[in-house]
Image 1 (cartoon, helix red, strand yellow):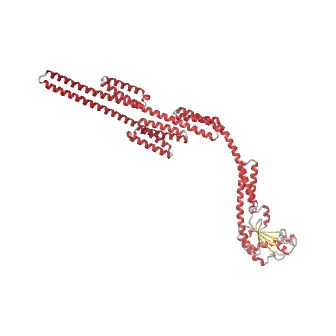
Image 2 (cartoon, helix red, strand yellow):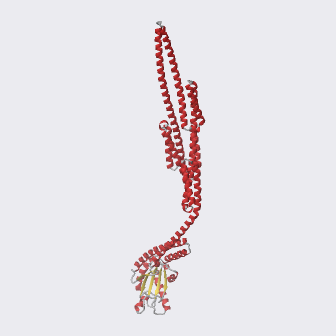
Image 3 (cartoon, helix red, strand yellow):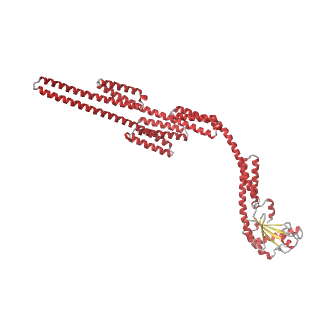
Length: 571
């Protein structure tokens, strides 16, 4: 038992060293190997009827193996490996105990058979002696009657009885000695079964020689010498058995280590071959890759044939060849990937530009360029940047600019939609003003009052117009987020200079009323006098002139360029 404990400690130290030096993939291979070894040991013990002769030990081994598999599923690799090896050791112990129990049973059976034979033979011999004794006594009785012949017969019968007794004693000693020799033979047979002819040749040969000497002494009826030699033979056989068990376990541990080391090397070679495959080494380094794959196949074959040293050596060659194949192919594959990446980037840039062009052109003839002109112009400018970057082979920049163009267009579309909704609301409110003309223009919503708003040649508002001005004020005050431009216009009567001054005064008077009388915030209103420079009707008659004499109130809802800002007028 102490030997098994020592072997377990040494094995676990080896396992720890192997795990520290290897990655997760190797760890799993080592663990699975330990579990397989434990399962194999349990199966061997069961075939030896350990469940009958060593029930506690085999039950403990099976429970340890079950716990090892549970630890494996829980991801506790080190714990699982330790439990697996404990299970393997317990199974081996139960197997040894089962063998010993079977041997002892066989010896006991032989003992019983020999003793039964001895008892039967002794009974027969005693019975014969008793018969001869009875005959002798009868003849003696008759001899007492004075017959010389009867006396002789009595003496013969007495001698025969003594001989029968001696023969019975000799037979008993013979069978007892034969039993001792048989026990030595059974122990020696068990020692041979566990490898004594290999691991304990000296003790085995000595025990075999002692058994032969004991048998020879038995044939010469030297029972004491035969029994002594048989005892010595059994001691040598027991020593050979124990030595063989220890040696076999040491060989098994060494074999397990060799198997594990070879298995790890094969796994490392397989991983390196996989890495080589990832860079198409089978194409770019065909010869090296083919040799690596062939070496790996040979390593697996050697492992299956239990040629672990050869498997290790061939696996290491496979790993080195695969590493060389990877190095040779990686440069070529990197260039290929770079070319593919460049082609992909060019395709992405062209696709992004095409989509941006399609989107911008699709909105060019809609209200978007008018309702959100700055955003739309920014999207167009970004698209131009993308085209320039593409022609300069700055593909990433082309993709970014085209994407930003799409984003800017999306913002423009959203802003245009919101502005349209706002202008529709203002338009609905404005058309409710009496005698006002309402329309949308490039700046927003225009509310127009024309005709005799002022006395002729004067900047004084006619009283009849004031209610409409108050309605306008309510609309303006309901839109606090938008500024207002008030434009004064005249017909072409009189001089241009006079008309310009008059329209400036009228626009100012219009604003003053909105601020002073209607409560419109002053800072929201701007005025401009345009004189006769922006007619809306031909002046062939008084009707045309009446239309040109007007006040246009524009609620500014749209973005303004630098040139348009000049038309906003002054406070």
